[in-house]
Image 1 (cartoon, rainbow, N blue to C red):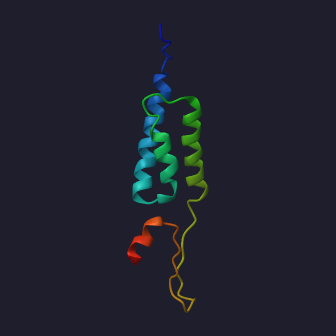
Image 2: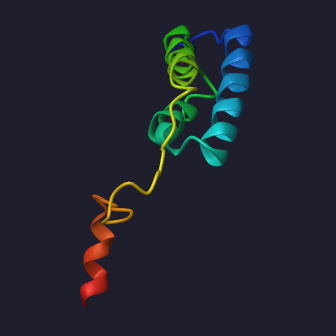
Image 3: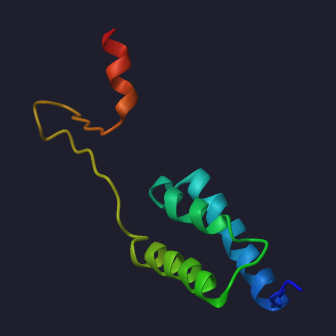
Length: 94
């Protein structure tokens, strides 16, 4: 007989609420948390306390960086310089 683990409904409900909020923030303003949030969202049906702690860690990161910003003051003569590591850009040269 297969062993079924018990799902803590309180942890699952809280985890889903936190992930829902993080997904909203990720899509609207914080693209830098996309990988972590999507990786955690795979566990919404059966989260553990450990996954909930990871979700709260992302919240702590957001609180700790809420006053960070990008400033473009026009002081460089080169203008805006952008670097990317996207692999798909090589397709533009063909």
